[in-house]
Image (cartoon, rainbow, N blue to C red; front, side, top):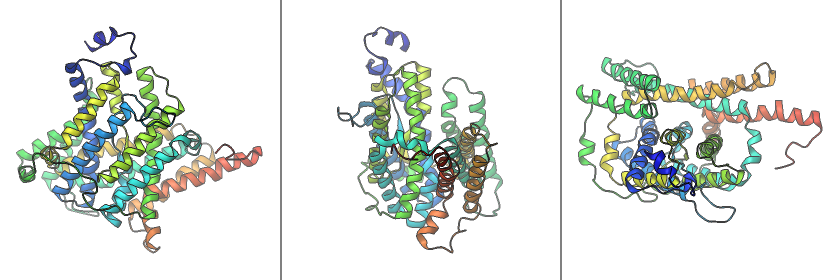
Length: 454
């Protein structure tokens, strides 16, 4: 139906078409459902790891939804008309990124809320400022570096998922209750089953279905209390700096910058994929405009007590399946996200998901992140000794802090913060070793300046 309706407007590019209210609303809601699980998982994961209260989690979910809506509208509609405009003006859904979760957990556990938001603001400003130079910086992030980083990111999150599956009692050996194991196994198996055999758009919302179904089972087992939902307000406005003014800690900022670099690489690929689906050529200036919007959105995230933002690839699948590529439809999805975020009762309902249910679903989610990294590493020539050493050393160093989170506590505080973070440790290792073993050696062999064009 939608394809026929769109085809009648041949003079207008599909990206620019404005559909009637009914189809626009239905398609916008479909985009919202595809993105919702990823939107709420980030604050839920961080809250579980840092032991936040239910009221704090409800606020964070609301802040993430509102800010995601604003960022999505900026990407779709754009700001400015000059060369350095903000927003790619394609049907792009923006949401909180799981890439930043390990850095945020490390920062939150070491410095608290305000340092998390300060590092987010700084990372957003960094992204905004270097967006125009990004195509030149990409050469420092070949598959051997990005694959290593993304693999470590997923692997570093798996122990957290395992801890939640056992009831979230903390790291180390713990007794696991049968009820917790049943809930975790149920949600994990259901998510995997839907992803494997689900039809149409169903696999794209597998995490959301797993969380809902697991929570229903937990309710039937008497493992859920809705006291937080009853006490939550029906309507609430998310205000800037609601949890206090940001704090800017150097070690925290460096950790977040590395996470944002990975996010920028992912988003670059996302923009190109969306351009292909929409039959629009994505040029370097378009990528720069999109990254500026992500930087602005991430700064806004820190201001609104939310987190860094990225482009959601699952919504690219919605564009492909529906055949409707209108940026106005996706902008309407942004409006719906804002509306959803100003109703705290809905956020409180999401906060009721028990940790074992979240752990089971997250085991699949985090494992898939690690597999994405392994897929990228599959492109790397491991017969090359340089690449083999880069990956093996970086993965090995990351395991130091994954297996022993206080391994580097003999060092001064700022260095502890950096080196006890597996993403930072692996990222710095992979970047430096790739420079030394590959880029510097090639430059020396060819007698050419390494960074002549930067």
